[in-house]
Length: 638
Image (cartoon, rainbow, N blue to C red; front, top):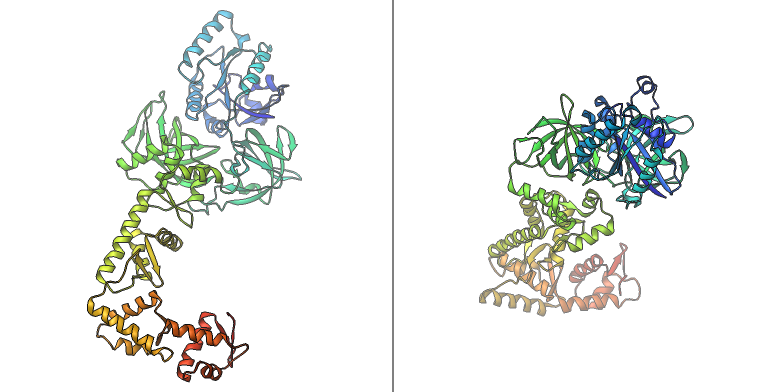
């Protein structure tokens, strides 16, 4: 069945609740105080029975200005609005305020119901209908059905119901994938025998009985944290009926196990793990309503409403000092409490004192860096976040100075794994390291250039060194790149080695293709050392004796390293190197034993002195060729 959520809007006492009762048979005013005062205070919920195969949920919102915060807790998740204007009063203050809120929240469709027609004559009604059409001209409600009804007499109620059902035949914009499940909580209570129950509009995804979900935000989390409080779905109801599954577009009540009522409140978000981002700062496009007589000054404190949540936030205007009516700009909101949101979510702002609705906007970045004002590069980046396609946005985020991980960015952008991979394929030149870190091409090129300059400088200063010592290089890079994450640093090095930018030479790193350049004298010395090792064979030369051949120990060390990398000699231990063919002979001799053998056995078969046999055998153990039990050795690798 198709699932549709309708929200009411309009001034107090214009007949919203009575109209919903006429359409659904349900009185949404459930509180004693609401019945006593005759006005809606809290959100009310109903569903409209029909034969068209639709689940039509209705959220009835308060119209009184004192309860706008309650209205905002429920109106954001609707598919279209049933905008109510009373025939006897016409356009009133909350008519205008609700209308501005709907525009700011991106609501793009609706029906206008002119109520209380039984209280006016035909001439007045005709004049009122003309006023309504004029007021909504140029907006998303222009040209939408305008139906005059009376809940008291039933006039045109069926006609309105038919129009609602017709309006339900629209393509859903909601995502139903399980991984994207989220439900902003607008009510929490306990039921005897069941425990904690939450209700809300299931805005994205699917949830099933038995699923584990997370309650966001949580004060213990850092930016983007995924460690919210866990709970399990014990039961689900939609429109008063128990079900195993609830999907996007349904008003849903969820019975939770493993969590107390006191641990959840309106404003929390029930979601799949990693389906939202928890943050204390967001980048936004912000606008002030055209009808507002207030301005937002830089550094103003305002009330922010998103989903069912309300927090106080400081507004940092990024390109001006004040934002006036009918203006918009990019801004950074620095929140006094964490919220759980996703890029693209809409929000409303109200003046701090007096609490008056003044504007709204859209979230562009849920984990931004802290920006300085009036910076061209910041504004250009915001423009990409606002107007660019998803690949442009990924490239922009991957180019920031703070490293961004693929999975974290997918969560920020509300992308599934396959969608993220597809977007990365279209983000030309982007680099994905082994630890999941994304680097924009220009950032990767900068890293590469700085690394090459660093190693090249070392090569120039140390022409006979095989390369820059690995640990020294890593230490220098930590300082230059301001990278504290060791895994990220190692992943970047591994990627650069894999792409042939640099070469791993054991304890040293060299630029790809680097070769030690010797003078003629040094070449002769290298040849002499190589010949000595070849002639010595199994009668190994002590390393100290080789170093004594030249006063510059650096030259000898370079020659030994070079001969080793060329495969002419092998390092047995710090005291001895051995010619490669002599090593091969020594290894083959060890492998010739069928069983355990002693040092004396090996010495005799190899035909060398005990002194050299005693140096070789521990090297075999270390290389995994033999194993020593304290008395004898056995070959383990033939």
